[in-house]
Image 1: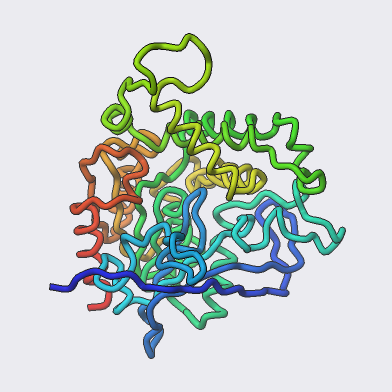
Image 2: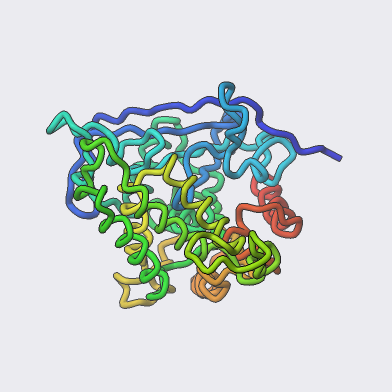
Length: 375
């Protein structure tokens, strides 16, 4: 029996693209950079490459640790590595920070060559389709004509879907985890409340807060608290916190008294230390806009007719942000297009964040699917 292990010390890489890219909005970037990491070895016929697409606050740092930051473990390290479900002894895994991100890829914090100052609010809104289009350029740079698999959870799953639509001949398997073919009105509403918290922060300065040497921390903190509530399930919050209070008796004030209040405030405060508010705005808009069925009168089956890949789709029973019903919509549309689909609905208590956690059944079915890809 193989004991899973870490990929160990890793280092980010930077790819510079000097050709302009025209975005879905019509805006043009004269050039851009993408930060990425790779794990494992690309085989001789370049048939074992796996692209991992990140969710809202994710990055290119998917697995392993940095030599100078041993505590900074990749966000999907439990899934990727030797002996793990995505086994780096067999696969060459690529993680990319999306365009518009704040981890080194060109985004609002980058210098706008037209002004010599940071883009800030002048950075254009990007879409899932834009992300996939520039990921394809990175694949070209790496000499990868076809991905063995494109894998993503949540917003990353939307990217996996879009890969099969924009580049149907460049992906053999798509793994769509805890995702959706489009946001519900409720999800768009949550995103709008989060954006308004940022946009109305006095330190936002119309998105050009870098020039003022401030961060719209209050707005970003509230946005993260709002988002975090939607990532958890009622069961999980009840199990972890219930109605536990920090003190024995109520204090009759507005400081954090319940443990859940302290937890949310902690998560919000921590988020402001490493994530950029403009990137948060851009990324939630990309979530809102994604809807491949829109061009087909809302017919998802017609929208997915272009896909040729085999699919693995997974949902989680207590995920109310992207409920299992949304994954079943994807499965139904794919099956009615005659595609091969494996579907797993995982019984869990952790809500939307389950796709990031160690669930034996989830990891088992995903690993079993990956095992057969190269056979």
